[in-house]
Length: 249
Ligand code: 6GU
Image 1 (cartoon, rainbow, N blue to C red):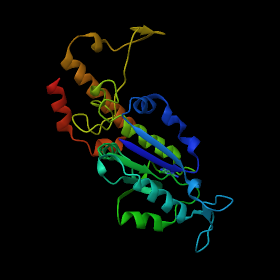
Image 2 (image 1 turned 60 degrees about the horizontal axis):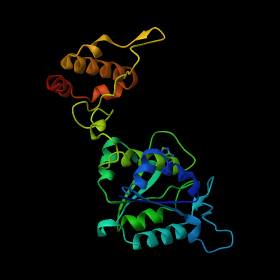
Image 3 (image 1 turned 60 degrees about the vertical axis):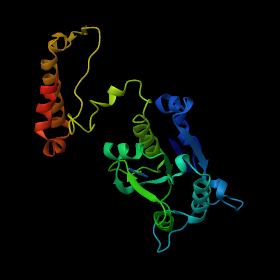
């Protein structure tokens, strides 16, 4: 998969060299290219913003540098001779969910356009929206100073879904929000050795050897945690799926 990121803070994307994403890059599973938007300005001060039409606080990112940057990146031709999906981080976008992460992980090429200030001149989204698949995406109901941290969040969620990036393909299976048997339930607690630590013992059932009892216990723990932390998920859950999970174990 190829990922391009256009930003006025390329150094903000340094964490893409670390850990899971960094290793995927080193292995050639991810081709990440971070670009400085100011490379596509032509004035002495490398201006990327201006005052908003209609007045109001803050500044708006000028369309010309974005247009030139995206035109050049798109023209560089990505993998599989397919156009990129443009991902525009904005608190006004559609929620970034596990479902969207799965969908984006299937695209061979993503271009991210994290903005600062009050956002990018709308005509950039209109212009590319006419020719490309453009997704305006928010990572949650709070306001950040820019889209760079959301790009880090989205890239990590997407990269770990790529074939061969996670060590153990099974590790996705029980993820909170993973589609399938435990859909809409949060993951329950996990334990490792030693069996007793600071007077706290591991739940006996986990060393019982009864796979059916362990699966049912995990389901109950997941339900309890979901009810406590995310009652909204219980509302839309499918109890049939939990029972199938028990029977399969
Ligand atoms: Cl994608 N951008 C900004 N600036 N703030 C956000 C966001 C994105 N998602 C949630 N808050």
